[in-house]
Length: 263
Image (tube, rainbow, N blue to C red; front, side):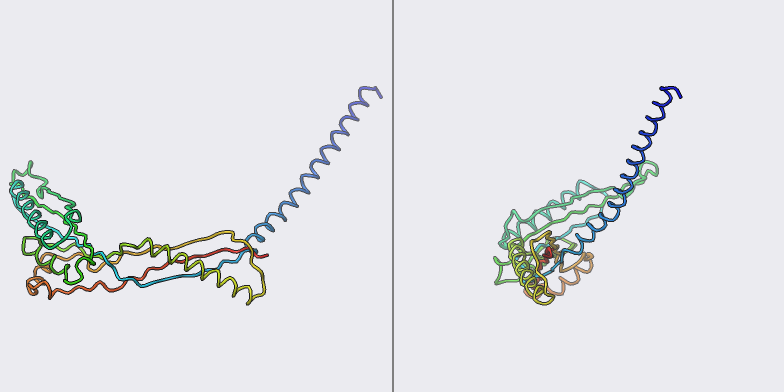
């Protein structure tokens, strides 16, 4: 057999053996990883325990926000804007006389629209409608001796306001209270950790994760009211002291879930 042929055969055999070894090694690694990775996942989920605690407190709101509306219809947009400006200006002036901070009275969503979109084609005289919203924010602590909400509604209606778009209450130090509740919830979770260890006989180690939930829903008093509904109610209660609206209590809460590592 020629020398070059022998050399070729030898090189082929060496190559085949190396390839077989590499394939075998790769196969072994695949088997090991297939068994090892799920073990890591199971270990991660099995070696931590979540402990949840909640702290809550009932708080009396000290802020009220009143949203009043003005709705007009007519054919003269300039006259309508003048009328709306006079009504809003007179209401603002009256509210300031009641002791409300002028900076807490805001005019929002002042809109004037043409109701007849086909005026050019039909040659009909256009009609317009105007809507405006007046937002008033009041610190109730400043009016503890009177029913300021009833006074706002009655005086505004007397001056031309014809819609009540909503009333809701708020808490001025909400963030501070929630921070206190968060600390209370954490302390409760720590106490639950000790009970858990005593009950099931395991030792919990370091914290691996903390999840919090403190979403607070709005605290509305009334939804939108129609023009006739508001007028009828206020006409029957012309004395502002008769239209009594209670703030009630709002529940604030903070939930904490702490994940502990099992030793």
